[in-house]
Image (cartoon, rainbow, N blue to C red):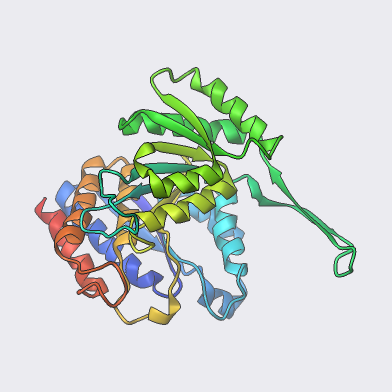
Amino acid sequence: MHKIAVIPGDGTGPEVVQEGLKVLEAAAGRFGFEYQTTEYDFGGERYLRTGETLPDPALDELRGHDAIFLGAIGHPDVMPGILEQGILLKARFALDLYINLRPVKLYPGVETPLRDKGPDDIDFVVVRENTEGLYVGSGGFLKKGTPDEVAVQESINTRKGVERCIRYAFDHARERSKDNKLTLCGKTNVLNYSQDLWIRTFNETAADYPDIKTDYAHVDAICMWFVKNPEWFDVIVTDNIFGDIITDLGAMIQGGMGIAAGGNINPEGVSMFEPIGGSAPKYTGQNVINPLAAIAAVQMMLEFLGEAEAAAAVEAGIMHVTSEKLLSLAVGRMGHTTSEIGDMVAARVRES
């Protein structure tokens, strides 16, 4: 029995979560696994009503689940940063979700802004360290509000945190068994201390994986090559801030936020899966938002839960819809409503 916590969140989050759960139900019926869901109302409406973001007792409840399915966080009436720090970052640190896993895969029928590139060219994974670096929030101000103000933001990197991320990336490259190649993304020519730790740990860990080819590229070069030669990449490992930047670029070359999903993973505990796009509040309740990213998050969640056949069927259902059913991924130009797209993927999963 898989225990799944569901956080629909804000804006169009509940709409896409509904379609993801529809596909999850179809997969369970087709492949015979059992699951139960518990819904939590964390998000903007709860914050406005109670002043709570993610209370500590709720974290203990979330730890008792096998996975978390998140819709979206972000409310127009809540100051930016409150929900993101109070829910997303709090969960990330408290649950030790130390891997952010971002597949970048162009599906058949999906348009990419890259000329002369297709699904065979855009198929790689970014493994981002998720609990250290600049996101720790270490730093402070001196003489704030004066002409002599100084602001310091520190990037905290530990050998333990760096090594477990790098080792996960090596393991993922081996399991993925595509090019058996791992690229370290960094900025060693400028960031002398944190990047020295990353490159030394990367090279030392590589000795345990003689079957995996390794290379290194600066983050600015990675951005250029994502656009020019995305086919060069298999698995990329990087720190928190660089990973945040390059995964958004990755989402664009795979067709946009409407198709991009990610996992915040603790391999030894509960993990959280979500569509990458925001809450899109202006489209709330209109049944026009694209749910495929949320459905792809369900596919990632099923892989994590060990339901490989079901995950493969969900991905096949997504590809069937993108290649044969949709006019576009863009809101208002899909040719189908949110719920119709969910119905089509679910139907394909049941037929597989």
